[in-house]
Image 1 (cartoon, rainbow, N blue to C red):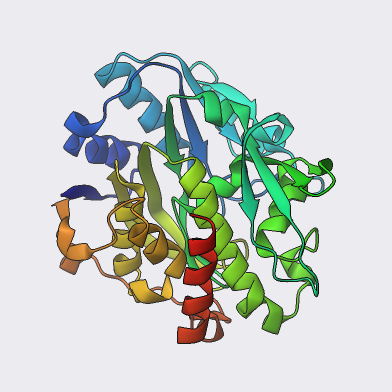
Image 2 (cartoon, rainbow, N blue to C red):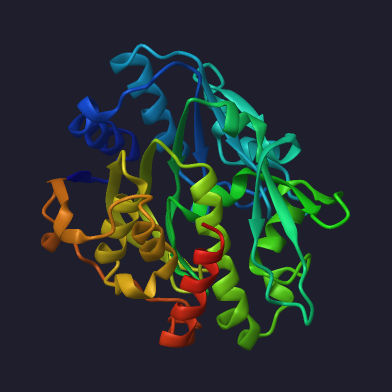
Length: 339
């Protein structure tokens, strides 16, 4: 049975340490190094958008003190800003204050090591693209996904699985074996199914239709290729409304931790008061065996789940972004083709 630790508190450092100690026996590191993967979406200082550095600091201290692991890296591929810059984001959001705890890695500049094919419905003819995942991520024996608990325009919520998008470095045209994009900010647009056309350039109908299906399918294909060993969700100051970048403060006061990232995301979905069947990218990942998606098969440690359910105000597109039966069938068929 999957176990998920939930700790209530206003101190991100102390709450994170407490949550990790509840599952310490499950946290087994085969060998160093480990990579911490926060959400650093924007280059500028944006505490409501990015993972609190003190959550990552607590994770690093836990590994140092409890597991005697000292080779710790922190990596991200920042996609937003003028220009997008991972190291600028780390500097502006106080990650460089703790350089004695970790080595920063700009995943955006990394070479690819593993590839996966993506679904691209935004063409009138068939296009074939592969996306490459950072070699730093692929070479690391232990990956920790540390997302910010936030709403998302077409997927409902962005959590541990969605956080993996920051590991992408390269896009390739499969037919001509040609590299067509490098750096995370340019590569992530391909996840949305319309080639290099970024989601803010799509119509609402495209975003809640074929692009939503493509993003869900491609996230699952990414997660089938690389999975985090541990998930720590920063829900101390969460985001509701028009996330993942333009929402408003949700004072949630929670840290969620699990060695099963799908279980962690499933529990977070319930906490946000959202129907797990609307989070099809998480649900389908569970159906494919990437983690536990059935709440009845998840043991909650710490705070009782029923006492902390706090409905989030969703993105303005959420009512249209919910998967219809036809869209679920398309998603399922697309995933079946990639088995």
